Length: 136
Length: 64
Image (cartoon, rainbow over all chains, first blue to last red; front, side, top):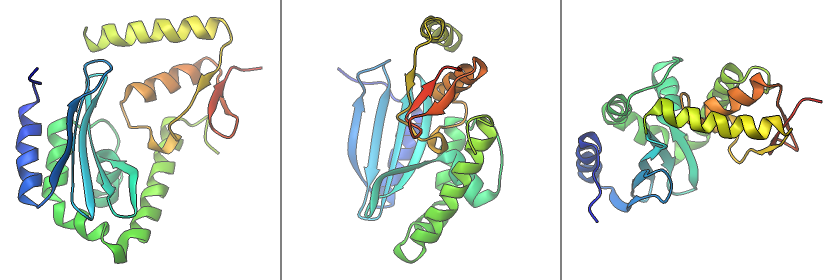
């Protein structure tokens, strides 16, 4: 059965292909009618998925930490400075497309550990903000 | 089902377990919880009812 995808996602797939990434997964998930599409090359992985009808864009280092995904909100904080609030699917895609050279550079081997450390710090800061009673 | 309807059903499910003093598994690190996700709403709903992280961050436990 054909799966309907948002037009933004289809266009983003073309962008990822133009950067040399190939499609690894493109499927409807079993729960809540959610969907996932995942692209990667030997260095970077990008996935777009819906979680209970809310869409997210994630990036991972495909070589060393392929299961360690960073969402667009954290990437926004990392590349553009701290911000709060949800980002629409279109704006998540725009963030990745417009900052693609920066993402490629920051996830390259020489930069990777510095990037991971900074992203982990930003994740902790976000967790403290979202769940002030739960984090130390 | 709209987002509001989906959350209402979800909240009802959570409230039923809260009323029984149940615990919840936490398989996602708090730092990996996406802003405005359902998981964020669920955790905030539970903390509003006194739940705390326990078992090395793997569970949300009721107060007391």
